[in-house]
Length: 208
Image 1 (cartoon, rainbow, N blue to C red):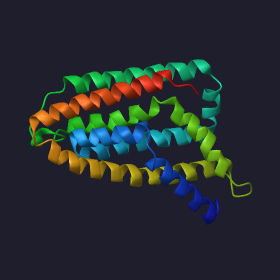
Image 2: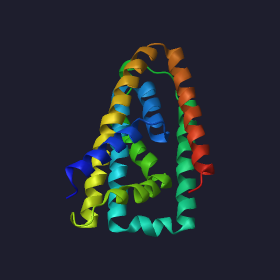
Image 3: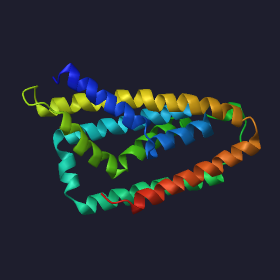
Image 4: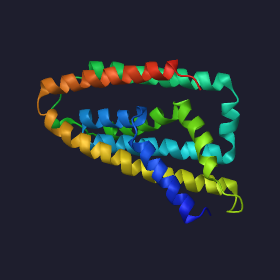
């Protein structure tokens, strides 16, 4: 296994990356403000499931195959942008609801989890980032490369839970106060719609 020093250095970098502004933590923030801490944490859980898939893809070498295919990159990018566009449309149409209705339904909880998974898996840049980032910390002689990749992927997921979880809890607490007004709820829904639309455009126009 990689040394403690290497693992610690990787973990610090992963935490800093989690705290830096980006589409994923922006997504968590807006979902938490609009739906509460539970909603944000469910989205974080979904994002982490997606990271597990990306880690496995890198460890198995599938990411390298994907990176070599321009068509696969474009198709996944378009699918991701379309999904974000659909979320934007849903947010623009969402009505204001009573606080006890928000996040109370198990079906809604499942949809938030799936939303986080889809957000992560339909962003090809996450997979390419993992392909470029994780192998940099692999140590010759420290064990099979695939197992080291899995180890660093798990460390990255732990860092993501800590940083994104903090974002969800903090922004969710703020959102709890804001959502007491149905008018504010409507404004938050529209703001979420604008953010999702902006993320869709950003993804669609991004290159490798």
